[in-house]
Length: 116
Image (cartoon, rainbow, N blue to C red; front, side, top):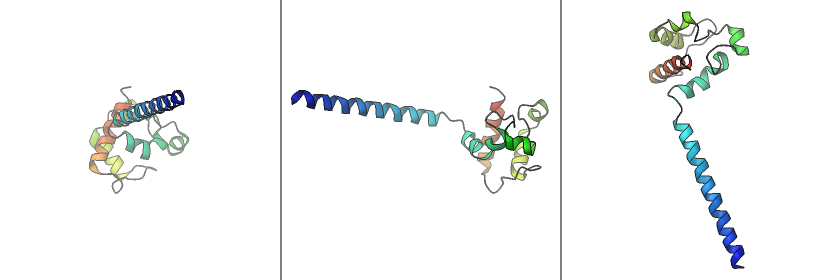
């Protein structure tokens, strides 16, 4: 009887440690997300893709620009901000959907895509 109790306590302890390690790892990965990345994934990735190349089905249909193309990279942050706020071609404007801070963070995140 004592051996079975020790085994149950040991199993519970192992489970608790594993659960804590998992939640700690998840917490670290959630914090490691770059500012703007969550907004990009929610609003932009459908057309522009995870890498910003615009090679998704929706991106090809709407002629989404490749953020890493030389002519696009040359545009200023102000130009990109204006495009996000007002929209361009088939892309809607996000002036009512994103804060100024979120837009700045998305622009910075998009710039980081081309450095990888």
